[in-house]
Every structure is written in structure tokens, then in C-alpha cells.
Length: 87
Image (tube, rainbow, N blue to C red; front, side, top):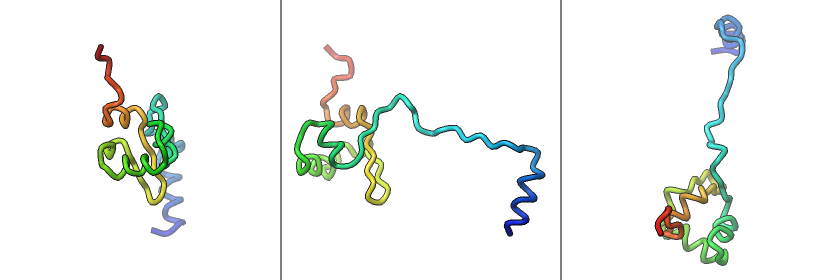
């Protein structure tokens, strides 16, 4: 499809405004990189690297290339640091 064809389809689609809703929940807390993991768990960077490599928090980690994004709450639950409301 050429650019001209794309513009024609866009102008004649009947829908002029495209609304993109964010896919990220704004209530979640994220930490970034090995440094973020070390701050979250209160450990050194080599220990944070070992935690990441161990696979225990893999479900909380999203990695795209070199960028590491960690869902903090889920990582703490998976590591067993958060009790989840138990007394």
C-alpha cells in the first residue's frame, strides 16, 4: 500500500479521531534495571543480578533488549517477601 492509498483510506474510513488507551495500569509500581531490583530487595547489584538470573521473579520481569522493567509488587510476592495479607 502506498502512502497515498493509506491517506485515502484514513480520510474515508468514517472515523476521524483515533483514541489510544494506555495498556499499562497506572496503579502498578515498576522498577527499572538491575539497580531497581537491588533497591526493591535492599541488596547489592550483584545479588540483584543473581535474583534475576535465578528465575524466581521471571513472571514479574519484562525485558526488551537491554531494558528491564519489573512489576515491584509481583516480584515481592514471587520472592516470598510479601505475605499477601496473612497474619
